[in-house]
Image (cartoon, rainbow, N blue to C red; front, side, top):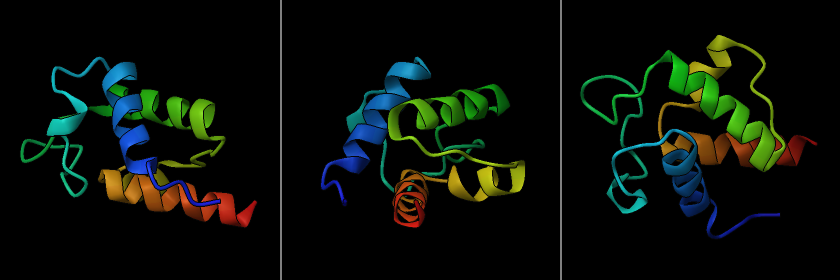
Amino acid sequence: MSDPNLRETIKAMMVENLMLKVSKEEIRDDMPLFGPDGLGLDSIDALELVVSMEKNFGVTVPNSETAREALATVNSIHDYILSQRAAA
Protein backbone atom coordinates (compact mmCIF):
# COMPACT_ATOMS: atom_id res chain seq x y z
CA MET A 1 0.00 0.00 0.00
CA SER A 2 3.03 2.27 0.43
CA ASP A 3 3.78 4.60 -2.47
CA PRO A 4 7.50 5.30 -2.85
CA ASN A 5 6.73 8.56 -4.65
CA LEU A 6 4.03 9.74 -2.23
CA ARG A 7 6.03 12.76 -1.00
CA GLU A 8 6.61 13.89 -4.59
CA THR A 9 2.92 13.40 -5.37
CA ILE A 10 1.98 15.49 -2.31
CA LYS A 11 4.34 18.29 -3.37
CA ALA A 12 3.00 18.28 -6.95
CA MET A 13 -0.58 18.39 -5.63
CA MET A 14 0.30 21.34 -3.38
CA VAL A 15 1.98 23.34 -6.15
CA GLU A 16 -0.89 22.72 -8.56
CA ASN A 17 -3.89 23.07 -6.24
CA LEU A 18 -2.58 25.90 -4.07
CA MET A 19 -1.08 27.75 -7.05
CA LEU A 20 2.22 28.10 -5.22
CA LYS A 21 4.93 30.34 -6.62
CA VAL A 22 7.56 27.72 -5.89
CA SER A 23 8.35 24.46 -7.65
CA LYS A 24 7.87 21.11 -5.96
CA GLU A 25 11.66 20.74 -5.94
CA GLU A 26 11.92 23.80 -3.67
CA ILE A 27 9.63 22.27 -1.02
CA ARG A 28 11.62 20.31 1.55
CA ASP A 29 10.01 17.30 3.22
CA ASP A 30 10.51 18.85 6.67
CA MET A 31 9.73 22.48 5.73
CA PRO A 32 6.96 24.03 7.86
CA LEU A 33 4.00 24.69 5.58
CA PHE A 34 2.51 27.48 7.68
CA GLY A 35 4.07 30.58 9.17
CA PRO A 36 6.88 32.93 8.19
CA ASP A 37 9.66 30.36 8.68
CA GLY A 38 8.27 28.02 6.06
CA LEU A 39 6.11 28.02 2.97
CA GLY A 40 3.78 30.67 4.39
CA LEU A 41 0.46 28.95 3.76
CA ASP A 42 -2.68 30.40 5.38
CA SER A 43 -6.05 29.06 6.55
CA ILE A 44 -7.53 29.21 3.04
CA ASP A 45 -4.61 27.11 1.79
CA ALA A 46 -5.23 24.66 4.64
CA LEU A 47 -8.85 24.20 3.58
CA GLU A 48 -7.82 23.70 -0.04
CA LEU A 49 -5.16 21.21 1.07
CA VAL A 50 -7.72 19.19 3.04
CA VAL A 51 -10.08 19.10 0.03
CA SER A 52 -7.19 18.10 -2.26
CA MET A 53 -6.11 15.32 0.09
CA GLU A 54 -9.62 13.91 0.12
CA LYS A 55 -9.92 14.11 -3.66
CA ASN A 56 -6.43 12.77 -4.47
CA PHE A 57 -5.79 10.31 -1.66
CA GLY A 58 -9.22 9.47 -0.26
CA VAL A 59 -8.37 10.60 3.29
CA THR A 60 -10.36 13.02 5.40
CA VAL A 61 -9.17 15.42 8.07
CA PRO A 62 -11.96 15.45 10.67
CA ASN A 63 -11.12 18.59 12.67
CA SER A 64 -8.78 21.54 13.05
CA GLU A 65 -6.66 19.87 15.73
CA THR A 66 -5.97 16.91 13.45
CA ALA A 67 -5.32 19.32 10.58
CA ARG A 68 -2.79 21.30 12.64
CA GLU A 69 -0.77 18.12 13.23
CA ALA A 70 -1.30 16.45 9.86
CA LEU A 71 -0.61 19.51 7.71
CA ALA A 72 2.55 20.72 9.45
CA THR A 73 5.03 19.45 6.84
CA VAL A 74 5.14 17.23 3.75
CA ASN A 75 6.42 14.47 6.04
CA SER A 76 3.43 14.84 8.37
CA ILE A 77 0.99 14.78 5.43
CA HIS A 78 2.76 11.68 4.12
CA ASP A 79 2.55 9.93 7.51
CA TYR A 80 -1.10 10.95 7.96
CA ILE A 81 -2.09 9.56 4.55
CA LEU A 82 -0.33 6.27 5.24
CA SER A 83 -1.89 5.97 8.70
CA GLN A 84 -5.38 6.65 7.30
CA ARG A 85 -4.89 4.13 4.51
CA ALA A 86 -3.71 1.52 7.03
CA ALA A 87 -6.74 2.18 9.24
CA ALA A 88 -9.16 1.82 6.32
